[in-house]
Length: 540
Ligand SMILES: *[C@@H]1O[C@H](CO)[C@@H](O)[C@H](O)[C@H]1NC(C)=O
Ligand SMILES: *[C@@H]1O[C@H](CO)[C@@H](O)[C@H](O)[C@H]1NC(C)=O
Image (cartoon, rainbow, N blue to C red; front, side, top):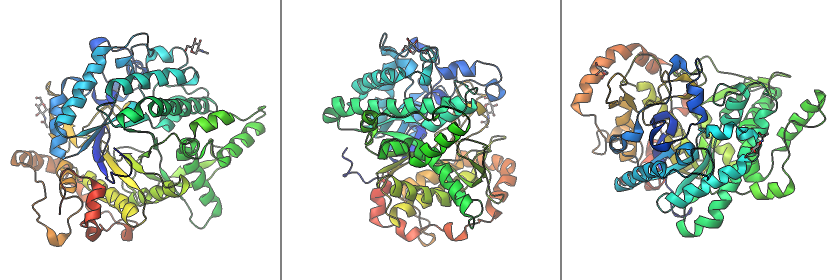
């Protein structure tokens, strides 16, 4: 797949995406934590430590995707996605994290999954590292030990070699910010380290960046000519607006928030080295605290050269926007953040429905990192509470966020190539267990067969894909629309009564950016949008 040929937006479900795809992460859905010689991961250990995960849930069985390939493919077909993003479990393939033992049974699982996807005409997008480090590597320092750079390169080499003739889209590391900050700063994710918040995240990030670069070089040197795929890193970031738009110090704080999230990783990979803004702030604070040098490690000139340019695209995960204000000594970047009280809530305390920030940060990426091809690798919204199949808040979220992405693409010229939704089905949402539900499909965990039951948003997403965009009111009803089967409607009627309060709130809530909330119908029905969306069936 050449970068220039495919101007498609992928819809992926929690595993990855092709412009429109879905994404699923290993630990969160795969289950089978000890099957067929799999080694332990840091999440297996974290999840088996009491009180780390809400209601003491763990990923032992999760959604049992290890044994339910056919069911998952059916769900993907229902959604009509043309790509599926999923991640590989490092310890399933290399139980102790090294090449000492390659677990063929683990690799075979991914071959079966990839073969089934390709047979269904769904292209795989594969993440090498979505947080489940082999525990054996954590035991020798994990991401704080720079020998991990070579271990990761070896692992990438094994996976590229085994699956590279079938998989053409690779993501090295998913959300390095979360690995560094949440895993090694706050400690609320595995490996749960929180006692060196001023230093450990920077060391971890430094090694993550180097490891990514080495994996990219392995592909570039050994596999690109033969397999012709693309490789990149997926970086997550909120957008930040100044809390008071008339105050320069709030505007400066907002820039710091963004530079300390997206820029921490994107600046080295795209521009070479950390940004001067980040280097200066951390050095000043380190010296002021009496340290002999900055807490931010330095890349040597050779490392800068090795890291710069290790991207075939910009992989981007995005969910929400924050309001930033200046704060002198609280956290790393000297900025506090709050949410606007009028923003719609979700099932996650950190996630407010703020579609306009999506277009802004996509434009920021275009300006800041040299107009790269962008694949949105995650975007989605959660709920909590009793099961509710009538997820109108999710329909609202996707309509508005996808619309902002389309505006960025069509009106601002941002080079968006793909879009993946998070996520295919309700899964283990990290430390919150199964409480926060991001899925298009509800998984009934009281039923031993773990059935995947579509929520209402499934038909909305499938319609966006099948219609290749949004249908203008004058064109509806249209034959491209996908309707829910009757059996599901019965379920929805039952669930409607449970959900009535939430639905009403969703519908009457005023948007604080009314001019941003209209759908760009007419633009959507042009043929160039069809190429952008890359939906399974193209509408003329
Ligand atoms: C770093 O990892 C290597 C093995 O890759 C190990 O020999 C060494 O002791 C580790 N260093 C620390 C400080 O744990
Ligand atoms: C979930 O499964 C249990 C056990 O089979 C069943 O009693 C219950 O009705 C199911 N719930 C839904 C919403 O399907």
